[in-house]
Image (cartoon, rainbow, N blue to C red):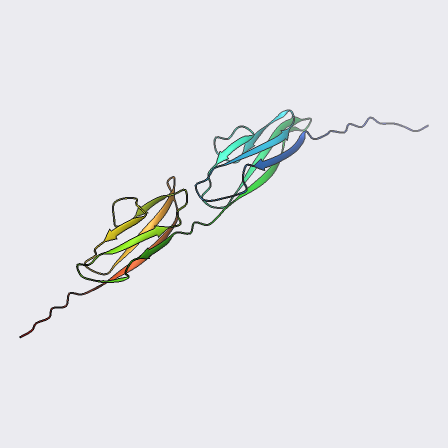
Length: 171
């Protein structure tokens, strides 16, 4: 006569999946991440303050986010997790000048481009315009940065050379 023993098979309540509203973004854009499939448990993302299955983020660089499903079973608390990577297109800030070399007293126009969804910040000039006019008296390097929130996404520099004043004396 065969002997039978009771066997308990525990089915994991974790069928976690994650989706993103967009998987490739430009810096400064927002993405909504959604995790689902955590039966009788709760989902937490690896971002401080996240305590639900939905998370909105605005990464400046390519970032991987992980959602975990926490649940109770006969062995105590268990979890499973899934990750989602959001690819951020690199910030491509360019800085050009109407003239790279000027005479003392002349001006040149600096133009920044490529700061999509960001905010322009100049290091030596007040303002956040994409185009500025400068009149350096000596050779000067100007730096412009593209900020997303409080984070600098990228920067670009341009040196404007200034010809020294040339005095011409005629008799």
